[in-house]
Image (cartoon, rainbow, N blue to C red; front, side):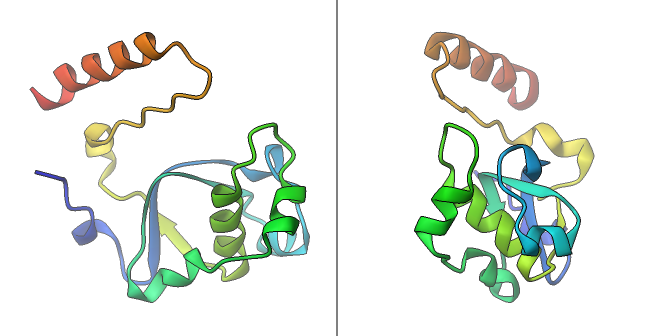
Length: 129
C-alpha cells in the first residue's frame, strides 16, 4: 500500500519531499530574483493537484540547459523550480514532519550501489517493520 499524501496538502499548494538552494545549481534569472525564495525542487517526489498542474508547464529546453550550472543537467528540477517561482506557488511537505521518513529516495548518481541498497534496507527496517 502506498502512502496517500493528498489529505495533508493544502489547496493551491505544491508538495515535494526535498528542496535546496537554487542559486547553487541554477543561474538566477529575473523570475528567480523576483520570487526571492531561492527554492530548488528535488524532483524525486513531487505532488500537484489540478489547481497546481502549471508547475509542470514545459519551458524552452535550450534555455533551461544553459541555465543549469552544475555538471548533472537536471532540466526537470530547473523547470519545476522556475515554474514554482514564476507562478509564485505556495508549497508544503507531502506529509506531516513526524512522518518524514515514510519515503526514501534512492539516488544512484555515481555512488556505490551496494552502499545505497544497504541504506535502503536499514531505512526499511527502521520505519516500515
